[in-house]
Length: 153
Image (cartoon, rainbow, N blue to C red; front, side, top):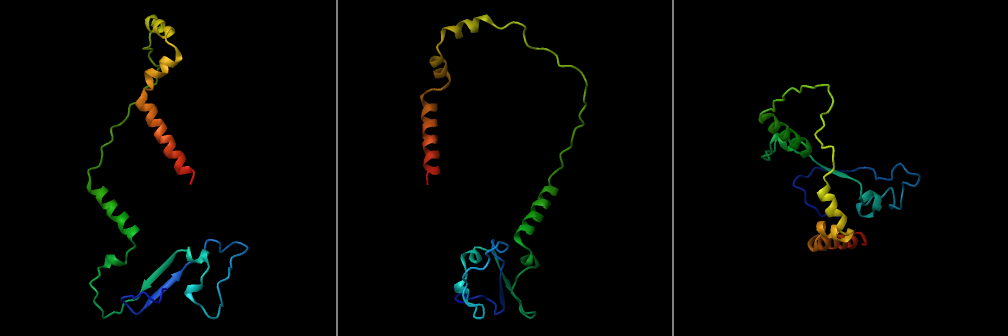
């Protein structure tokens, strides 16, 4: 499988890192003869392990690559993000002035009686229907069914 791939350079090193269960009690699975290594006969844990391909380039070759081509993408991406943040204007922080005092009471002392009289005449079902109309109930049913179908796989 690996032999079928044509690399642009004759010098290519493939490094396969240790599998996830390398430190466990049973780390060696049936991987074939150790003297005759064949990449088509690796255990599943080894195939799921990360791998790295290193291509060697001869000095006299001009491939047209920049120096940035040898920088990992994650590092290059974070460098570009840092530069874009530096180019933006910095937010000027305004100093906070803290005052030590008690809260002022803004709430009224009495509960409004006109709304409480109206609420006494409404049943719990009518109160529920005031907040949950048919569209909201239909939306809740749709999303609940979608969630249940996704979790039952």
